[in-house]
Length: 505
Image (cartoon, rainbow, N blue to C red; front, side, top):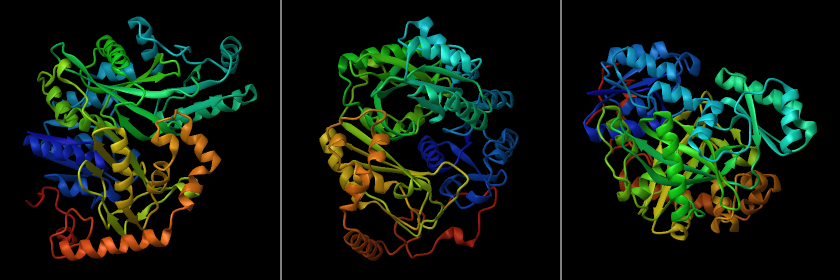
């Protein structure tokens, strides 16, 4: 059995690792700028699919299917992002005689429409934020909605996701500009400029529920994730379980999520997202019909492998778990490490990773798509790794995260490690007293910069140099390089492998 990973970066590495444990061979694809990326070097086979531009490579269905055919793939896993929620891609994979590792195309299409999914929530009796279930026809209709429901409101692209195509409006004078910006972003990012509107729930928590369903009528929820620390609607820190969800609310959220799963005919691993207001009431937001970036925190707390389960479900096997067996153990926190500079308004920071020192020790996991010597391109999402910690409870997890962030060092590019080192010192984070607007408010206040400014950069630099020297002496190889041969050499320096070259065992 052989699986093509239609993606790149850390999620491609994660899928390849899961396949290797299952005895499934893997086929990687790569653009011109990814020729020596870890996912290419780890896979059993690798095929070029075009230039750096995603539209000509990772979003090019014809080239992906050609690579799958050339590699003799039986299955195709889309990861997340790119074509992961593209119903046409799923249909074409199946039409080519391969197995799509994901939900049925009809479920992708249904839940990919924010307005259609809102109709489903109404039909299944799941609470919903007051808003429209049809796209806005024009600005006049938006103004009429505001007349009826008041401000603030949130404009959202019908086909949106990842924080794109969303605009908050707090003043009536901003309506026209926000409407046009949301439409423009929706068209640019998703090829669909339709927009709808809903009431903005102020100071809410963003809580999502992990679900899994098989083809035999079985479905379960695997607790919830706290995703309220966001920058411009893009998650940057996630936790499992949520500090504000008790056993009763967890059950109610889970049952609501399963109602969406059954109503949509969903079969695979997926996520149902909710807002929880300050009174504890929750409202359906949307469903992500794919593996989530933040899936590791659920894996750590529930002791499961969601990648492995997703592949098994695509092969028609029954769920591995019963609902009564899924009990949370401890607490996990994930930080998304982006190649961005928080001290320069999160400007992209592409370039060569000159030094990489990853944290380790008990309860520390790093899912990464780079190694020392990697060049981070400007062409794709800037996330380069995910730092995940797991401990017996939240205070212990916060302490472990603080320690891991101190160990984690990257030189050559700027990263959001700077942001997280400051964030873990904030009382609001330590006490879990935050909401979806918390980080944006914090950045506007410059309090994070003040906390970071109290750190001693010279002491930090000295600690890095000491760690590098010690690790180099102990290992005799390049620090942070998972593919070093132990003598400072690297087998890929002899040239990129042929299309049918194998990863050295």
